[in-house]
Image (cartoon, rainbow, N blue to C red; front, side, top):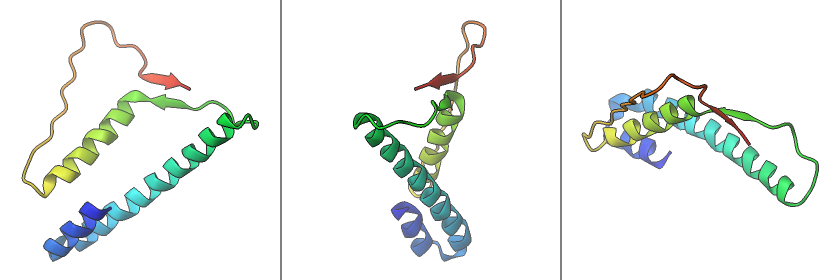
Length: 95
């Protein structure tokens, strides 16, 4: 969020784009907080909610998207390349 705020200060023409990014980061922070609370419940032996499956492909794409956004200010470029050496397996993991 701080990067988006600083970019908005440096590039006033992109304020709307940066505010959208800040809103996105707030949503992610909210999700992370919920996951932290769930982990706390698990560690304290309280009943937990159902397992959650995570799509690893989507997670990787989100991480790369974040890196691209952060690199924007420095003029760097981030690319993702995936080599498939065997038939694709579902990219999901359950905790």
